Image (tube, rainbow, N blue to C red):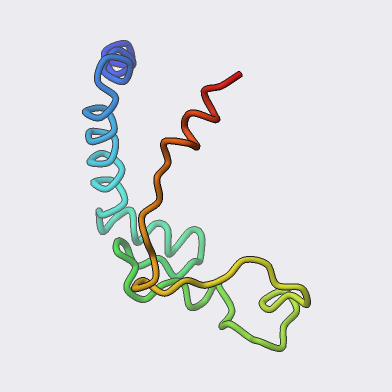
Length: 98
C-alpha cells in the first residue's frame, strides 16, 4: 500500500493530495476522534470548520498586551476591495535566472 501511494504521489500529485485530504478529513471528522482530542488533549476542538474556534486555548486579542500589539508594528492591512492582481511573470523570470 505504501509503495502504491508513493507511486500515486509521484505520478499524480493532485490526485494524491485529494485522497490525502479525504483521509485526513475523514479521520478528524469522526465523533470518536473529536471526543478523544477533547478528552486527551483538553483543547476546545469542535471539528471542521471550527465555528467556535479555540476559545479555551487562545486568549482574546488585547491591544494593551505587547505580544498582541507590538511596539513597532510591521505589515499592513489591505481591504478585500483594494486587492488587485499583479503580473508575476517578472518575478518568475527573476527566480529562474541564476
